[in-house]
Length: 315
Image (tube, rainbow, N blue to C red; front, side, top):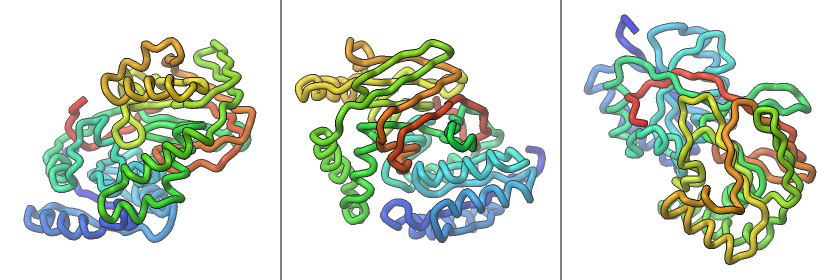
């Protein structure tokens, strides 16, 4: 950008157990002290960030960066607003949520103050992959920066979000909410029939359990589900396991947490692809960027497109 860069901050007041507005108040002072040109909007309801981002991008084609301040869900909303705009302006990100997996994946500081410094020191955008998914029932295109999950991990997200996550977040104990949800879901989640087609090759899973279609390495607050994922290869990483007994699941989860060698296990399916179609034949929980998708029989097409981001490349 030839002229001075300006920033439009979209602050999700519900992110980080509603601490994001307090975070913004501190960052606001830094921006003023450093004479950074900016505007700010605070979300008032779900999907408001999408509306704000699209409207602002439509009206400001150049010399602006739209900055999502919140969690991965806030970034999801802002990404969808920008991608549906006629102007594909860059997106910045200040992590202030509970998971912050995108920040981990791209090497952004997870401390909001440090992330802000990285943001304003950036001089040019970086182009990275983002995912696109299309529900075959309505043909509407949606975008994601992180991943889509069907089955186990999505059910964990659902149980955590409807449980004690918000209360525990006030004391920064989000992991306790996820641990509780994980144990409950491990007992209650059943295997389900699923078909997936990856670049024309069809695979059938009669007893699918974990189904992750991911653009980045992490999900669930730092769990390295896809350690080989790259955000510049135009591909989605697909990781699937079928229902395991408790001992095999513990072995899988231990490898997943410690060294990422779960992909070498015989009961873990791993492929990458540019064009993917996934179909579940029973109603299952879904998640995108850690946000609930309605329980349903899924029939999705998934691929990647490009998005300019405003931070220094650390990946």
